[in-house]
Length: 330
Image (cartoon, rainbow, N blue to C red; front, side, top):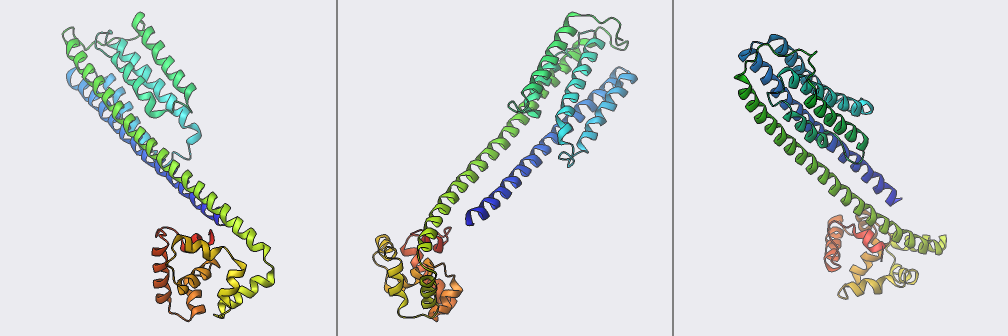
């Protein structure tokens, strides 16, 4: 019963831990989307300012605010969890075709192809290698094929920019290289932060699993103790409890008859325990709490707490361990 209670409590803690991970990971995704928003906003402003290409600038602006729309979905992830992976795949496909378009639109001379690699480096941040192996393979294959196709085919039927002059390509290429390197570093930073979250989750899970093992062990020992108690007749149990509650001088003698190994085992831990302390240990063995011990021994609660503290020190029981549980297991 004790084990089930703590097991349920730890399961609740584990669920809370997973929720915390989801929340922190969602914040990371939102920060990533914010950076995408700033990058696309910069490009839309740059194109309209330096080249006067209103159509492409408008297109980029629409995409820019699409990232803000995704950020607005924060907190609704659980509701759309089933379609989340499909949505991520759609975003990668969309970004791949955007890179395709601008690579062709700038006559393949503006260094846009470097952004294919940025997309590849972003995959580990959004997907899990074990759970999403097929999705990762699909995205990687799609980006690679698009990169090869766009590199070797001209696509003359698609529009080309009329606003870029021959001398502009060096500037644009340098700009794209710098932003692709910055995007690559951004991917590394976010992947590192995601790994840190996962590592923390794994460490917490190991700690919870260890706690569960300890509870299983404790529960087994308590069950053994209960089996021993079950060998006593109901009359014996009522008798010893009645003697304890009435503070009878016969209690300690009867207790040692019913639990012949308890006092010797306690004295093995510390042979310097005095009679009154052993008497308290016997009461705690019966799982009497502080208030009940005070009533049975005609002591104040503070006096009982003081005595229990001295016993705890003599038996070297950690403050994190329940002293009754410790003595019950002896």
